[in-house]
Image (cartoon, rainbow over all chains, first blue to last red):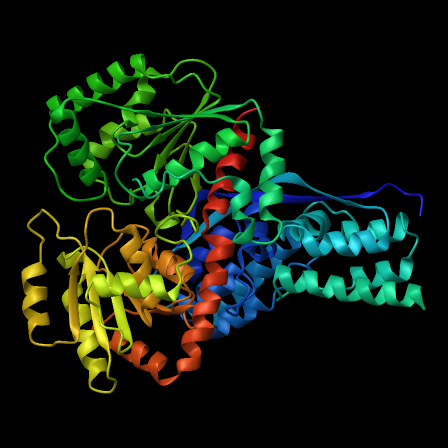
Length: 219
Length: 401
């Protein structure tokens, strides 16, 4: 256990409204093909940042909008099934989104939007990273700090690191493997899938794995 | 606002903010020590914005960020013009003459000479000081914090003021649906509630009872509550009709509390007439600065209704949810952004919809507790002043170096 300590960072995100919006499914398809990739990240993986502790259902903003505003449950379900954490890259996810929207439009031409429908407004997230003041050198310190840090640290080290910045399996698993030399624990942490959950739930699942690993060490 | 100027330190929020949030803010504050922020507003005494600034300015200074608050001043005609311009920007047709705009420009230029605006970040709040930016100098970054709905401004006026707004480095809106069309970056920062203010602080049942007795609200039955001005846009008559539909099935009261507006939109007499026919409808004219009274009423209510026909962000919804109450609200303004339908309350479009949802809650009392708890957590994560502070710190970090 001679590696560098793990320094926990959190972040505060600012949402910038972009000059793109969609009033129906056809416009959504056009705009999804046009907006910066950062915006697709904001409406899929980064939706975790603002999801309430009680999830309301759809795991990304596109599915939520088609389900609740357009009231097209079939399309909402198909968009909900697109997993940004499995797509490989944001560009590939853009391809999956446009393919799903195109296919749906071929079979179900869009109806005229009813009155009072809120358009889909595209955002971009700016994350300002901040050290939380917590750091860890051992598995126990790591588990204890993870239980205390602001929930944005889960986003920064798992979602931002892994799916936007391409840092391996995420910072937690990489550090546990490299600094603590615990590859099996790292595998278990790296296997935690963020899709469909909330950051607090993801924290709980990490704590479960870490607590079990500490129990094993004690035995 | 005597109720909000008591000094709170950031550490005081540890008991109410999400886990780890205060530490994160302290660390970001440390990183930004020595930078400066000046707020510019047209008043120091009116509105929810002012309450939030009253709290944020001392906390920012406590963090080591040199934060000041300047207020534009002018003669009576200036104030009248700024109100007219604000209403026109919010979409209400007004007569705004070239002479009025010239006067606005002149007074803002005079203020710009007088005010201390040499800061790393200059945040100008709302319409009154908007034109101060025409005198901007130095290297500071300038933000326009537009608290009202700019989605459908009076076109001629907006054609003249839009180039002014675009002299800012960015514009901040309270809700995405309020954003005007601009070529500069637009950020969305929702309003917030201060859990330690007089309006939202914890209040025990005995203190609640004291205030309810003083307001002559009997405590023998559950009650529905709407707080809002007695004007047509707040739809108090619609709320009474929803209550009447519910009253056929449940023995409860309705409390309508608010102030009487000075304008012609006043429906107080109609509300009082309707209430006079039902002893279980209580109409309360709140005193000036009624933070304590609103706190007590919201905490004692069974379900809170907020059903305006048009609204700004409607942060009253968050204030009620913070007190653990399910809210039945309309779809106006920023209300749908605060209520998670079926989780923290319901959004409704009609009187019948409001009655149906209230009946549903009363028929499933376990839902009232569950939704109330979910609502409080939702507000803790998304609508507390600590989140608001973080947004401002992040702006400072991102826009100034």
